[in-house]
Amino acid sequence: MQTIDNGSHAQKTLKACNIIHGQEVFSDTNTLTSKNPANIHDIVAIAPTSAQEDIDQALQAAHAMRKTWKQTPAPIRAQVIGKLGELVSKHKDELAAFMTREMGKTFKESQGEVQEVIDTCHFFQSEGRRLYGQTVPSEMRNKELFTYRRPYGVVAMITPSNFPIAVASWKAIPAILCGNTVVWKTPPEAPGIAYLFTKLWHQAGLPAGVLNLVHGDGQTGQYLMDEVATGRIQKVSFTGSTRVGKIIGEICGRHLQVPSLELGGKNPLIVMEDANLDLALEGAIWGSFGTAGQRCTSTGNIILHKDIADTFTQRFVEKAKNIHIGNPNTDRSVLYGPMIDEHYVNHFMEHFDHAKQDGASLLYGNGRITKDSKPASFTADPDVGYYVWPTIWSDVTINQWIAQNEVFGPAVSLIKVSSIEEAIDVANGTSYGLSSAIYTNSRMHAYTFKENIEAGMSSINNSTTGAEAHLPFGGVKGSGNGTRESGIWVVDAFTQWHAINDELSGKLQLAQMDTEFVQTQTENLHLHELI
Image 1 (tube, helix red, strand yellow):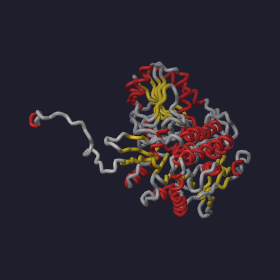
Image 2 (tube, one colour):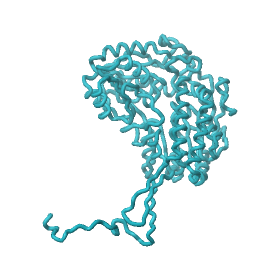
Image 3 (cartoon, one colour):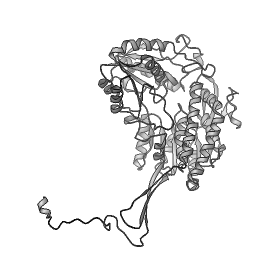
Image 4 (cartoon, one colour):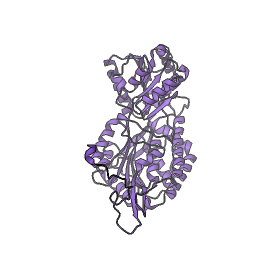
């Protein structure tokens, strides 16, 4: 594939076109650029900022392919997904290197993200032979009842920059497998990797118009959402902030649609008095600071039993001081690299005043990394990248701003508790409910936790981050609207049930009224005696 040599040409700029009905479209009228966040002088990709006309064309292409793709047998649709998995596997390291360059996660993490795409392909290739309905027994003679899964039609897909192809694969692969066509609005910070991923879809044999790629900013997303009202979009799948998710939910709700919403989190990690502290510290460091804290499942609040709180805190701060931060393009030993984009840095910096105003104490961290203010283990050039310190807050209570709000950066709060019951109350004390974790060697603590925690996903003696491709992914409360991604559960998001009543008797049989119910003896029963 011609465009996938960027790993060996580090300074080459990719022209990331829109792809509409299989054709590459690029308008020079209004463009956006994605910069290497570790070196902002490196322009990774240039892409069009799609206008209403582009959205119209993409929706026309998706609509034109609805019937053809729906009528393509599911096992045949699945063959395309299987071939996609083979191609992504073939180009795994090249895709990972490009992703690291475009959005800043470590090469190992990028490899993991690409592997998640491969895993999702393998899982759903087999699901193409298992899109089961049911045969239902009728209450009448000579009648058959069936249920079938039917695709919605055109799916609008809006994805984030922190997992630019993994989250896209969670949505596009099952949506397309189920017979839908897709218009994908990419994140403005990562159009290049989305373009390469879409090219691989078409190389795998996906017919033109089934997946249509449009790049753009928030206004482009608004153009797409405006089309819900016109009836040109039958399903919306969005991953991003709770604030935007609520707006999308309102738009869809007005038109009797149920979107798939995977939103933010303020994820609790509980460490009980009987925990393996070495293991808990390892999980807490990774959950809090991996990917520079830019995961929706990143640890937000570490809830510490009072008996181990001081020891844990001291060791946690020491480990944070030794975190290796740097340029993941040139140093593969870093724990985390730059923030994805400067606006994420600006948002991160805003949390300091909020935390201090509520009385939280800053144990470690100093905002943006500069040449005059950098951790001992920092090895990059701070003048050309979006780097920030790992940040730890203590003297935090659950009602404070810092404990309630998603920072979306490497910042974590430490909260002391006295019991497992109090720990769970604190963990449940936010408006979010995405991921959660506990470190304990008590089976009873673990049982109490998993029975009472308000979260869509929970780990025992593991981090708040990380999910396997065949488990349901999603949250409760402000972290989602009950829909799930990944595994067999996501099929419910991209299909609707169709009930069939097949009358074979040659006569009209009325449900409930003409049914041969068993007749009971009631001669001696008088209704007034029962009243």
